[in-house]
Length: 441
Ligand SMILES: Nc1ncnc2c1ncn2[C@@H]1O[C@H](COP(=O)(O)OP(=O)(O)OP(=O)(O)O)[C@@H](O)[C@H]1O
Ligand SMILES: [Mg+2]
Image (cartoon, rainbow, N blue to C red; front, side):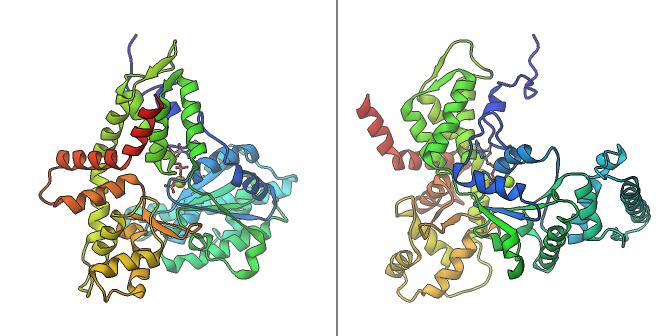
């Protein structure tokens, strides 16, 4: 039989089970704390939804799985830096083509159906006309006057779909007010189309960072916070994967995967996938196959190798000197956080450590710089947990990189040396799990 690498079609291939870069289906586990709130919000006519939380916390996966229970179809717009509000409307409109071209209208009366189709066709032909113009000149594609938020809302409502807008926080501040107005339009359309709805997703700490909507809309916007995964949830993913592939990891290996993942499911999926690759497992096994502990080390090294470029680039962004200031805040914060336990520190405790080196450093400077280090422009090397009030490195790999920077000069170190250094740092950090596991046996 010919094997097509990367083109797995059987459902129980290792790539369908462990999915570090796409929403989990087979290993999907319900997030009990947010499930009911999300379903309630999706089912309530007129309620708009904002789903937010740390990157990798599982927002897209949760939404994808839950939307299937409520809607048969939805459209998704993924925002990118520099995108305008007009482009967002046009992108959403373009996704309605399959629905309107195959005439699956929900309208009850013929006249309503006729009006909706006429509206669709008018917008489409205006858009096509501007497309032709755009090809012939450098002119920007203009939004047809008929493509208003109301008209788009009606077209989406009539198609029985909801509209998912991902990463709206990446859009320029000047465009943000318009989204707030858009939410208002969709709320009001619920009388005509009870199912019409916008769901906004953002990898941020508060719902208002995704959409800054007016106070009077508060009652009609459900804010759903998706927390990082608990250790039990991460264990459940591994256990589901084991059953699906008929494999078994050692208990100690599972504990290490959960610790290294640090609440981020994609790391958990990636390490499990790497272990399977290292053990040459591609499909569901016909007999129960035990995966040895040494595959864990291979998995971690492979993970670090593939992540080392992006780790380096994140730290370069964090450490880049943008203007001359009295203190090099990034270096001071990274140094202080790399010597404390992985769960991190509250701001004032961090200040105490920094002041040992720099007695004149102030809380004011620290406060604003800490926020920057959680943002993409500064490499997002830190995360802030609003429940505990602690700042920590985004994950153990970022922490190990930061520790390696204290021992080595990143500019003088080759990539393989750096990978080895991070690997050793992580092993030392988690030596306690190794020790506990060896005592158990
Ligand atoms: N409930 C879940 N059950 C199993 N695996 C999950 C679950 N949620 C997320 N994952 C896995 O975690 C990874 C990240 O999930 P997802 O992309 O949904 O996060 P996100 O919060 O949308 O991230 P981002 O902010 O970067 O878009 C994926 O590999 C996905 O397969
Ligand atoms: Mg996502």
